[in-house]
Length: 332
Image 1 (cartoon, rainbow, N blue to C red):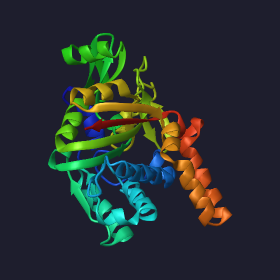
Image 2 (tube, rainbow, N blue to C red):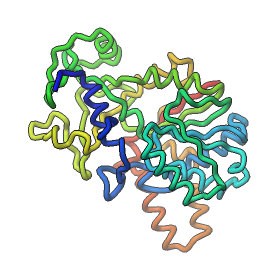
Image 3 (cartoon, rainbow, N blue to C red):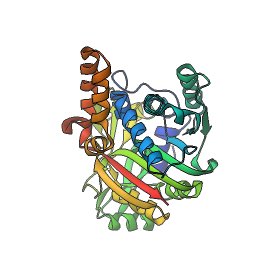
Image 4 (tube, rainbow, N blue to C red):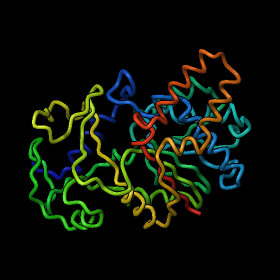
């Protein structure tokens, strides 16, 4: 196997022909990891409430586009639509729903799921990339997307390359050096593709809001965070006992997001940074507690308690609430 840079290796691991995300994968209890989407429908419900508030304030037109990027199952956008139907059903006939999904198998799964869930009530449009979408006014949403961008590995002035499944730090790369200095890293991950992604989104739409949830911090952590998730086991990538060849393409590989890098990429593309918040703060601010109170008033206590326990996982500091962050941007 020829030597290659780490971003190519990680891209093959996640997105190659036999890569982890190239085919349908279970997420949640039976999968390799949990996400906010797999935890509670009220994650999508809270986003639906926020979308309605954008319409009410006049930022989002009634015929605007609601676009999820990297939808995997399609459950998140479906939850959003279900709550829009509950809270403001008339919007279902005017809003346009879009998923950006590069893989044909996942597009097929999403389409079938939407057909089973909504019949012909909701029209779903697929695009393989943001560059294919052209719209006037939109709300973009993504859950755990920035941690899935391929990255390069950096250690004390040298960029890593991959020999087989081993990493050698002996490459000089001026672009990686520049980013490492900018984000005060002497070791760690440097994401590849944020700049292109931000420019594509900025050119897609005249006026939009973009919201994303991911784990990380505004300032880069001072060490490697690269890790593999396999059946809810977390394996540090540089663990001396890791079997990379066996895990390649069969498990998720990820790292902590440096939100300062995301922010800079969007601002360079002419998009305004609005805020970075802990997920628990963001969901409470957008009305998750009001949605739970509505549920309490309309269902049996047993059902309410079940949904409340699931929703707590979204906002509890020791689960998803604090480690995950919401970042938000607007193009006006």
